[in-house]
Image 1 (tube, rainbow, N blue to C red):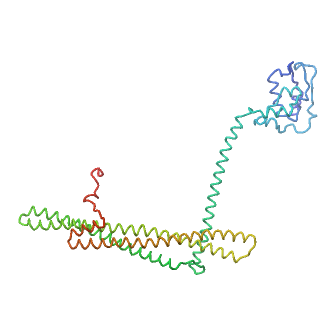
Image 2 (cartoon, rainbow, N blue to C red):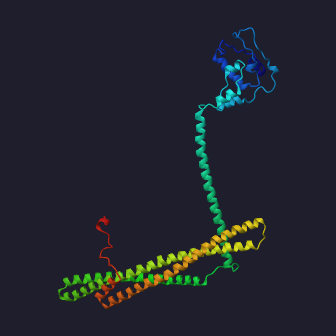
Image 3 (cartoon, rainbow, N blue to C red):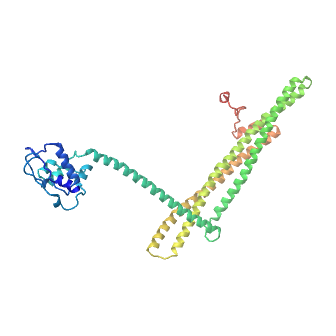
Length: 392
């Protein structure tokens, strides 16, 4: 059946009018189908041109048995025409046996208006995607490098720390600086204990002042309701009110003392200890890279080893500079911290002594003068309570 179909297709005639155009669209469609499906079959250039219709006398017949090769194969012209990458062939030229020249085909393909939408869409879609891929790749590479550096640094420092604890590694020690750091840590612990006790004193004394105030109010109420003990209750009520007033003044002095000690311990000393912690980490890194450089220096001296030694030398120098810089920062901060501590504690201890002595001596004027001397401002009564707008 296939041979018969191919024979019929090969023996068909293509009528041509006087202008060289095909008479009907059906003939053009048939010719295109033959080009798409049967490239190795009969070509239009091999068919005879008949001036008459289908009933003409002369017919160009090519028998199918003379065609060699496969009956169906890939047609690149049809594929390019469907994909829009090549101009469509001129059917009229093929029907007349005229093959388009290479220069004409090149001119048609290089025209500026040839498929502008497809090419523009291709570039507009490819450029942003390529840029996003490159940006994503760059971020991934940067993260990988940072993780790699962190892993190597952590491994070296952990190895150095264990070697120091087991007594196998050497440690860089500044005896004078280490002694100052130990004194600072011990001092901080003692000052934290003073701060804790001072806060407890503040809480207990506040409760006592509140009790004295309540007791004074009760005495004043009973002095009005008990005519026979009016004077006695009145004297005690006035005494409790005076003690309550002096107690609030002393409480302001103690609160100022606690606030200053808290700033010294939890801010000034803590900042210095944070710098000391950074210094200790830098010291550990410095010793780790120093040990690594020493191990490489005693090894072989081939080309690869020399490259590793050079890299280790650079890392050693970087961590050495960091260690020396933090060493200097710690020394300076310890010096200023000691000066600041002496100045602050001298003022606060004098305030605490004078205020407590004046209170228990019952010298109200000296107590108020002590607060003015140290610029201690008391909060007015009821300032800690929220206003009626805030309570709404």
